[in-house]
Amino acid sequence: MSDVSAESEIRFRSDVTVELVKQSAGDQDVLWAARVSTAGEKSLDELAKDPGRSKGLINFLMRDKHGSPFEHNSMTFFVSAPIFVFREFHRHRVGWSYNEESGRYRELEPVFYVPAQERKLVQQGKPGAYDFVDGTPEQFKIVGESAREAYRKSYAAYQEMLAAGVAREVARAVLPVGLYSSMYATCNARSLMHFLGLRTRHDDAAYPSFPQREIEMVAERMEAAWAELMPLTYAAFNANGRVAP
Image (cartoon, rainbow, N blue to C red):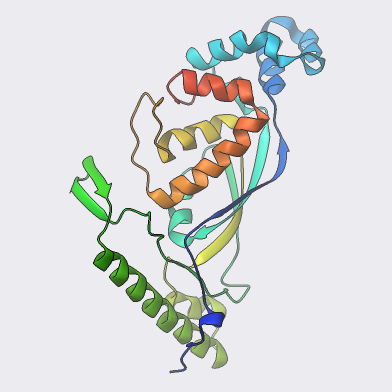
């Protein structure tokens, strides 16, 4: 078997990439969608008004779970993260659209995930009542060394099969879920709020969540971008327990 031994041929990362590449989203989108119920065509006047004057309405909609006005907007993110993050991400189906790079149609790049020093390694307790704590230096050492060794061997096997003429869709079977992939993910504010409620920890949350740290890293970056686009909606989300309406 050929050996991919040169460090420059394989990249190791401990971060994620999240970029807002396209958006049509603002607090006024919530207001005209809500006011059509009582104002009809006059609700279009909201497009030219300062949404700050109606932040009470946004809070009311959030508090009383009138969710549909929060769906009339759109955000598209480019995300680069380990495959295991996407497997969790794709459980969010309502209000989301995804397109991910394909291992059938392109040769996958050798970029792999290795946890950073601040990543907690040790699980204590049992599902439903557990927490994670810092690992020891010895544990970080074995995680880093074992991951890098496994990644090198699996990518060498992948390259060997490709060189022998094996189809990409077959050869990719040896690659691990720590391989980085990329996708576009499109959502609206309501579906994003549901995602954030499950995939982040926050002091304002009415219901505790225990997300895997790597998908939380993606969620945090999405949240920061959304907070700038729809600050009144974001404030109402936090004020009402971070529960999607």
